[in-house]
Length: 31
Image (cartoon, rainbow, N blue to C red; front, side):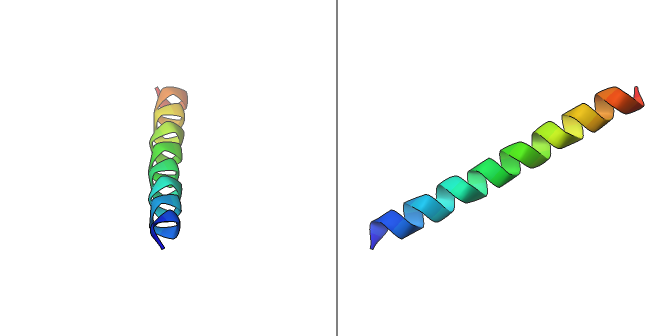
């Protein structure tokens, strides 16, 4: 029961991290 919620939380955190990394890379390219 709790495993699924933890897995979803990790996936959500990873997606946010990837978005942050992509924004940082795109920002460096623009600059």
